[in-house]
Amino acid sequence: MLAVSCSQVTDFFVVNNSTQPIDVVYRLKLSRHLTVDNTPGKIPKSQLRETWGSSILKLDTNQYRYDQATNRISVRLMPDEALWVTTVPGYSGHESKYEHFKIGFISITGGEGGVQFEGD
Image (tube, rainbow, N blue to C red; front, side):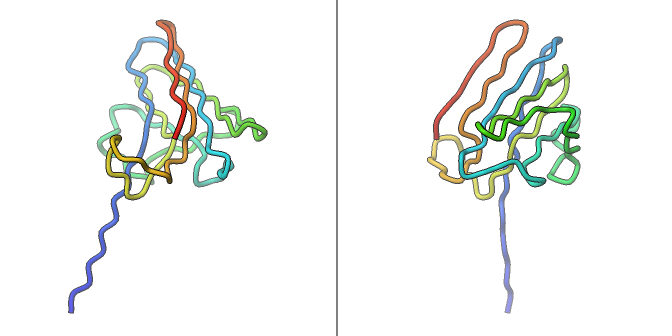
């Protein structure tokens, strides 16, 4: 008898490819609150392909702001850094609806302007 299990997880990062710091603000969906499992983390962008969960350095509480009332997390990201925001098991691509995605809002602002995304 042969038993095989396959589990795919996808890490989601914001990568600063600019030469200036950027500010990232994102909101955990209301059913989620900040825990050890979803504390933001950073790695150098050069390590993105080598990273899978355990290599991500979780940030100390003085390296980000968390507003418990709104579930918003704010982080300053320096050039060539990658910010881990969440891991999603079984994610099959951006074209499919995925109800377990943990982020409900994200805003990225830098010296050249910004972008904002909101929704399910």
